[in-house]
Image 1 (cartoon, rainbow, N blue to C red):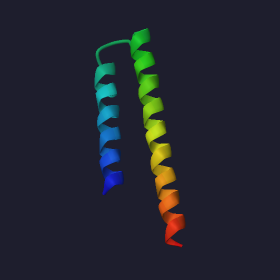
Image 2 (cartoon, rainbow, N blue to C red; image 1 turned 90 degrees about the vertical axis):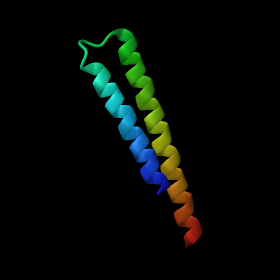
Image 3 (cartoon, helix red, strand yellow; image 1 turned 45 degrees about the horizontal axis):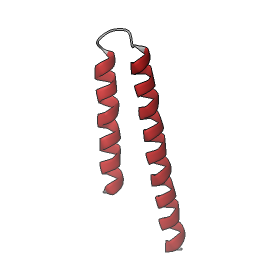
Length: 60
């Protein structure tokens, strides 16, 4: 359930970035914002993977 909430949040953030990109060519600020978003998404995925890994190893 929690993973689905994170996935929905990530999907929403990606949709917002894509919607913003439809306005024309991206500015340098837009590109930096997209990179920062990618970094946040990657960090969140890393935390989720670690949590899943830790929960899986404690169940054994």
